View 1 (cartoon, rainbow, N blue to C red):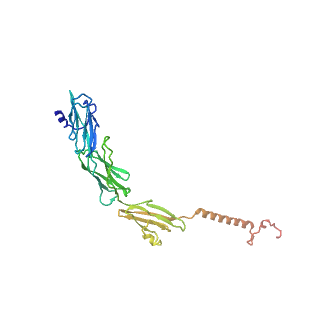
View 2 (cartoon, rainbow, N blue to C red):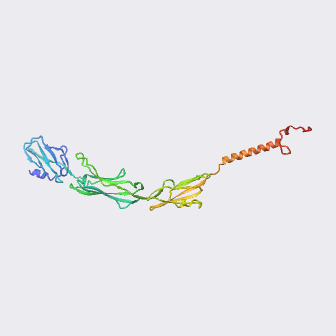
View 3 (tube, helix red, strand yellow):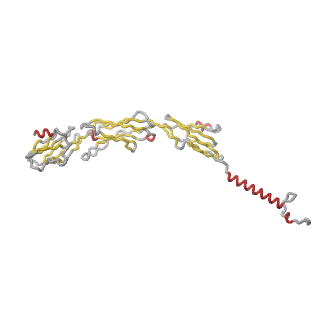
Length: 343
């Protein structure tokens, strides 16, 4: 039995491929939740003197004259179990360890954010805490913002088989498009092809509140044309957080005073000039200009009217030359009179 006592000192990795030891373990590895039960069978078709399991829980000792032996564990109450199936033949001895992964889902997952609203362009430290999970080396943490995964982290270097608490930390730059977005983290144990597909545990989600200066929805300079006697609406709408305040500067004091002082994004005007709209909030301010001009006269129509007038005047001059009389009247017989004849 000295051989088997020393075999327990080696790391449990399972049976290597092409290993000559004539034993087979089914299943070849175990994934079990802490507190649950499991069983595994060890068998050999070779002639042997004995076969058995050496284990801190459910061990069978050496059993002679059998071709298989069953390891049964009613309750997993240890975090490290490395059962060894050993074979004793007439000319050889060998053994293999059964790899066992014992897992426990986290007690809870929580996320911490900075206190108060974020400010556009600044970097913030976010932390996701996972409490009492095992084995942490199989843990993955995913950070979600809206419908995007913005960060992932694993803990492969965490060697403890028993439950530990770990934290995932990520840095995030705040953008205006993040305002109102939902953010949360989730923790998931990935136990490989022989383990169960466990659900991810999510933290409580938070809605991001990002402050940013106003920005105009339309360009910061607009050209507007007034038609005769008409009115126009100037749109100074801007997006910002907090909601921007509006102030107008008018080119003519004749404009209604209420338009100048009222906090409104749209102004109705009827006079030309340069109108200035300033929007502001706690994060900054911005100014927009409206250059308002009146429509020029239609020169084509004016030219046509003048042309008709000149044409009529020309016709009158020609008619006067051909048919005018000294008395200032017209006579269509003027051109038919002959010298010496009385009229």
